[in-house]
Image 1 (cartoon, chains in turn purple, cyan, blue):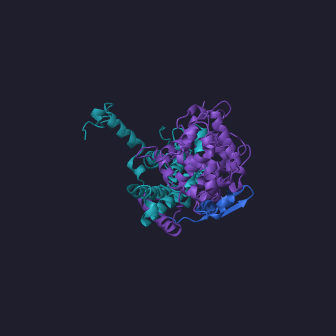
Image 2 (tube, chains in turn orange, purple, brown):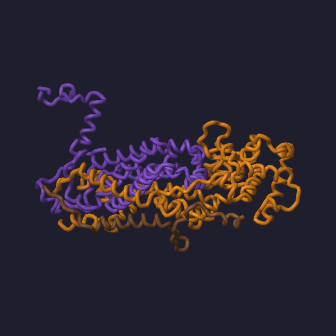
Image 3 (spheres, one colour):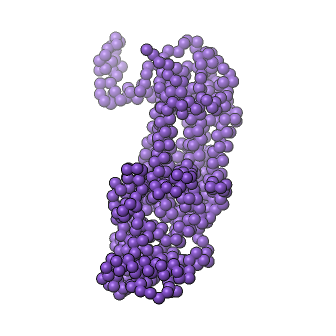
Length: 317
Length: 235
Length: 55
């Protein structure tokens, strides 16, 4: 029993699409077309590069952050010390904060991946860098000797006091018992302002290190770095995933990925990231396997754009 | 070369050499991709529209991506911050990527409306899609290698999507050394291989005929006049 | 804190954006998308220079 396959099927059968073409042909020169293509595209590329160049906005360092927004730096350092920053509560792969990971129902790949890039913000970002100073601040000993509860109370109180101070300025904080926290954060600010912290945080004591994870996470926990990104329309709620600084086109092919972050169900979900990635994976798979999908694969026949594409062929039939 | 004329199933006697892996492979390749298919001098009459130039445009874009990428590789990722030639090379790399994607996307749109997977061209469609998806990942790692504000921010922002699906623990966007290797070694190999496979598929299967082409069409029935016989099935 | 930061000139180039409600697009990306649509339409309507045709 033979079934006539749909004309939109990918299957090889006994039809014109499946056989070598036996009709009229025309001259064609593959290498000539390749040469013309390379020349035309080459001229376009050189012309666009000469006219529009490429963007290169300087990166942010802990030094430039400390100089431009010292109060923000101190507030962030306090949060790292107290374990209340974004990174400190991130969950895998940086730490094991409970209930911090995203999931799709019972499926929780973030939790499954485990803590593979451990980050302990208080020690890694604040305490250990301060220990590398020629004369480590005496407040370090006070901090280490205190109980976890005491440490939490000091940082929480100092955080509240900083946000109440005019412009968050540490110099204008109301009097209170903040323990060693003001001394530690101000020592770290000094270290950052001198440019010392960039090196210490990034190289982890090794002569070579190409891993910028600590620096990037610390920068992102503050307001200065994300605010710069907001200025340049680079954040996720600004379609920033597909944008480049300035007016240079960015990754416009990520438009659908960007779009999903702007619409409801995704936008306000605590699992937005995994939902968006899962949706994109499914859609990519659908497009890749389109030839298998009845209905979808028939769209090109129902909306006859092909009549335009091959108008010469249909005109002469 | 053999003087034995009667057909024999013994490949040694027939002189085809097809009793070794090498010989069998050569026969397989020659059957599926004879030289006149690989490097054709003619195409069906319907291959006469601008719709057919975008695939070649994307290949040409890739040539400039690889060329400028090689020059950038010779000098390291930070050269372009300090050298005007380096900055121009960086611009060439960026703009060839933009053109590569533009041509590839228009190519994809056109092949969709042609339903170009018809007649056993499934793998041509799939390798094309895989080339597109792998190119997106490759471009993304390139954005992470700019070693400037944009790359810092992308590293910070993109980690969330990757961490949420559990990939971030192994593919760490803030680890410049790791991303560097992905961008200049692993992913270019993948893009190159998939694009090469795609182009070979296009040549092996030929260009898909128009939808609803019929034996009664002038372009078909004007030819030799013999009714075409079905070709042996190919995998 | 925000006031403090706004005093310093931003080192980042913001670019030009076009927005319609929730839709916001950077000028460079907009040009690229329009260029692709134009290329697509032109490829369908422009006549192709004919080569020699054979049987």
